[in-house]
Length: 317
Image 1 (cartoon, one colour):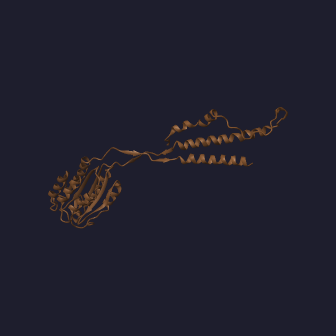
Image 2: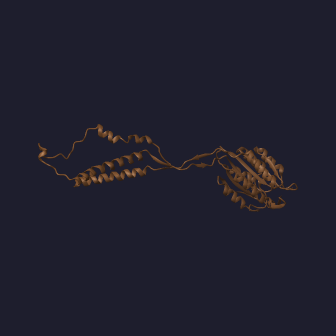
Image 3: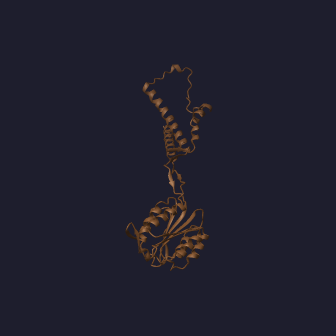
């Protein structure tokens, strides 16, 4: 919609008319050189057509002057076009997902009497979780022998979900560097705080690679204000999973440890995480604004140019 930032400017609209009434009239520079005492002796014959032309001649400059004055006032009033409201993403928190891509994640998970790999189950459940995190900046870390950032913190949830789905086993190696994944998450956090910081780490193994130990990485995370939720994934007979380490990491940072024996429990865990770290519901919005003053200003300049040209031609003739 159209909006004038300074609408009070239009109060100056009658100013030229008031000045014409209040100020003394300027002397006419085209006075006759001969004064005649008896004007009635000189009969001026003027046809009706000539009268009409003369009347039109004196009216059109007045109309253009008026239009130029209105255009100038419209430009001064700072017209703006205000667009539709656009919702801004509200940063509820910085949330990083760290997903294990070691070879053990290729083992099967039971689901509705059919088998899917643990990685496939993670992609489905974590993908749905990502889609619901409106307002959070989400990052994705993939780890195996090494940890690397697949997606830096972003509001683009679709990209995070797509790149998670495209991940595959052994992309980062066969082993499991849990400590390095936590350390990388700490390193990728913004320098300034102001938002909640959460890491959700999912693995089915034991820390057997990398440079930094999980406990040491958890202590660094706690100093940076990063809360870690750890998820151990695997059936009851899984011997590789080091639950003690995952519990310790979660406790040091003020998070929690969860165990998922099947895909249903994994879904319940992510639902519980939604409750523990709820999405911010407050929204902010803004309306894009475009300044339009140059349009009426251009009209005022064009009309002034026409009047100046007409006056110059009148004087030259």
